[in-house]
Length: 57
Length: 323
Length: 231
Image (cartoon, rainbow over all chains, first blue to last red; front, side, top):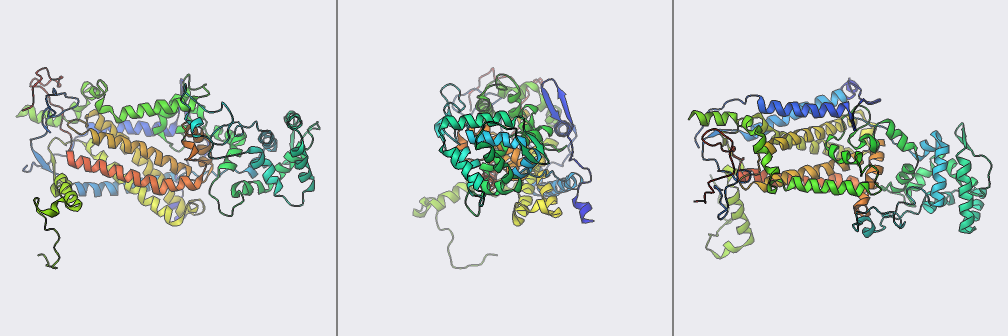
């Protein structure tokens, strides 16, 4: 049970996957991270923020 | 901090701002921090459970010399004759003239000098072999080599390099074709054998001391060969593979190093013998530029020009327009 | 209710002899720079109405988790994670908290850039932010060097060329595990914590940057054609 908890459910070891685009070479993992960052940034700006009741100055 | 508060300076919207005199709303920053603390805890726990972390076993001189004794021997003879990457590196390891990278007169490596001295022939070959007991043939070979004139030594090592290029690996044992390489065959053969027992790893690390945490010598020796580099290449960690950003396997690496490694892929840095210093200099300048961005005209206007702020503060602008 | 212990804590008034003391002067500067309701405000300006504002605190708590998980690794020593599944799990927490730290920090940087958050005497806030990013890259680098596995072998033997080229390799030896580990667990965390601390204090001191002003027609602000002098 402990081994299941502390071992990897998805094994990321083994040969990596890479994407080549012109002189750019990037791992799928890094591309996912960068893509997620861009998505989270856009969402952070676009998603409405909960409205708060105005207090006194 | 009011409008243009420095003497008679004009208000510059990219530098100055009218401080807020409008409404404030309740905001619990400690509760926010606590919630964020728990959220990040949950996130990293999930990632750790799902993906764990990579741990590829270290290479050793033992595994190298067992897996590829020919490459080991080829590297070892260059350590002996002073033609290896480490032997010709220059500062901080040795004083090889003209080896330091420079941009014009700017040669900081040369200026700082030798502070991690490495004599590859003594430290990687002769010194370790001298620690072996009950090896009279090896000790005699070393003595013969050391007592020979430099020209003879070079003739032997050159002949050995030619011969070992055609060497074979028979069940981990090195078989080098016959040649006029004098005692060098015995020396390198003994070193290969010593490495295959694990003795060379220990000797290079300990450096005559019981405790040591400085792996300079075994790492330099390993890096001079092709074994470590071949393993790195298979994992896309080589310099020309944008390797600086990458991690072993399918793990995300250091994506924040993208710009640093990018410069190594483009001319002239990608073929320059001063490429490392050139890339560092570019990155220092760009870093300085980012640090001093508030002072740099045009660049500090980009936020205003791109108008992303209109999205960020859209509620504020709507409320202002409504009043 | 206060308890009179008979020990005077502060007898100095601004005009008294004691007010020239270093202690009194430091205390007064700190009080004036950070009155309690500025240090721990319970209100924020109404224009702070975007999720982009949470990335600063997300970055700081990620750093807290980097340090906490690092402390657990320190309790058991640098070899533990190679020989224990619990150790490997803690190492994984440490790695992913570093990834989270950089993830949130870069989004925070993007947000602050597009807000031109250096405006209004907030340049030092921006500068300390960028410096903490750069020092964190260095701290992470020494972490990768401290792994004691193939990755650290490769990273060290490659990085040495870049660092040696600058001359720093004469003293800062990336092949020296002991040295790099001590930079990673002692020196650089102290530096990162100090710079991040200064950055957060500056945010409290200067406040959150107000929005760009739009002109009455709703256009974006131009460089002031009026050239108004300050009041």
